[in-house]
Length: 349
Ligand code: SAH
Ligand code: SF4
Image (cartoon, rainbow, N blue to C red):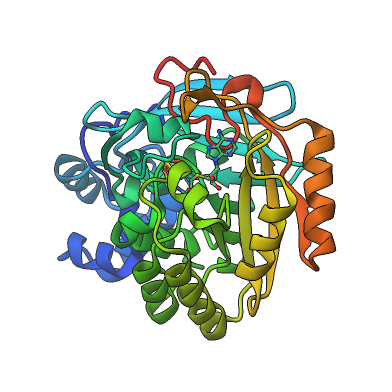
């Protein structure tokens, strides 16, 4: 938002009833109207015509509406748009609008500046960790994307920079704002959360909500290889237990995501390990051929993306094991906006 209100954390991240308390003694119904104004992307308090002049002045003195600024927009020829967003302390994050052929827009939101999980194939992981995002910084990514006027976004994937379950508190507040019918009103069924796998937080989400379709970045179902690719990974047996619990409790669809690397996790043994891991769960396997990130080494060698034939052959192996398989649309590569490519301060892929 090229907002005149830019000065510090904003009101955009406050769930409706929190906003009512914060703005007291302003009457609650007026606070709820401000909540709705923010969801519509109001530029400033001055545009909120239902408030009196004195109220508007007082609010502008005390609060900012927004805390982030859109610094750059990068358009991929395939229709994907990546935005670079500056936070109030100068940290930079990226957010992506994916568009399919039907014109449906999906927002890919970040939850952390950087990421502490250190997955060796991921650009965000290579950046290291700066900090957790505040709720408003998550909500505003959605608002910035909607402001592009490219349709939607009607769907959300929490798959941008960072590990969402390490920032569950602020993410929950952001989701309360995003899902509120008196505001943005995005249904939880249209919001997928992708995690590298934190079993305690998966159970917490199952118990305390919000119930969201979950995607686990399995990558490899072989403990040793997974641990090497994802050094902060938990034991597979713990994760499996947590996923069984999540699915029993929520009855929501579950995706196993697999970033694929040439010659590394595309063989028959891997497919069998996937089947064993998936046993007892109702899952779809989503294959993501690795999106190249320069300079990332694994066991001293450069990672490589699999050929289309290798990806196809692995898909058939998985199907042969009785698994359902989909392939990730490969969008946004031209602007470094595809999975795992987020995080370049300069915006060059
Ligand atoms: N931290 C969360 C969400 C962000 S990463 C998670 O790991 O799930 C989103 C997805 O992108 C994950 O499935 C991850 O395995 C995948 N990914 C990371 N780097 C990638 C790359 N360079 N190419 C393809 N997929 C990648
Ligand atoms: Fe973090 Fe996900 Fe990247 Fe791993 S893949 S470093 S968890 S953002």
